[in-house]
View 1: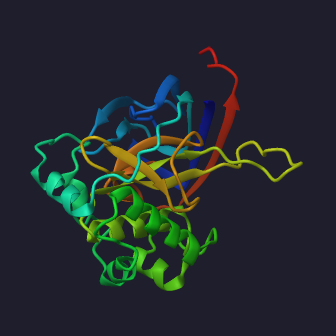
View 2: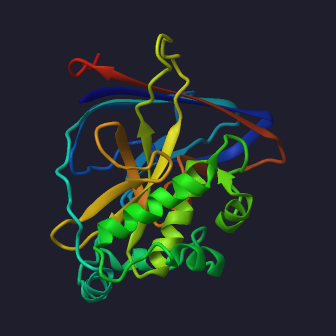
Length: 296
């Protein structure tokens, strides 16, 4: 499957800001089953300095610096991505064996399992989530089966309602509300599986959405999506689970990056000098393509 993705962001400020620095996490990091083509990031106005870096987690960060005062900034991230289907992972190893393997692993790369066993800035340990999810964890079942059970429970027991939460809503509050969005469901699943001893990461990317039968797909109406990646042992590696859609990640998902939680992979953050109000408008368009578009 080939997709053409365009993600635009417009930032405006009530007054000019100074010494602005932005960190963008919009360039896809390499991932199994994905082939990136023709990535392009355009900015208006152009930045004074741009640097592409990789950090401690599996995410590409573009650092941009502006020396001149700034009132408005427009960004456009565009690329083509070829996605291939992955084989069925089977049940996977039992959780007790998996936890021991993760703790014994000497892999210190961003894909190593150990850092994803422990609480992080947003995905902190919560007894309420651990106690709720324990009923779905079976000691004799494989990790894939247990992750599927928790994924399905989230999909079944929590209502997807846009606007019910914000990016700052703690996962435990979404649990009490019994509603939220993909970011909430991903964090809940991360906390649940880490409580059981399973290395679990937050994945950020895009989802190929389909309009209702007979309706045309609206340009720019897509959005960024979140799911979880579960480390299923040396033989399986990282496998994606989408609690919002209640299915394993396959051809409809395009991954951008992976971290411990949303804080590691947020699409944009930064600093500036100024006491101003900021507004952000984004537009995302994911379109299936017949071939890799040629770069102009």
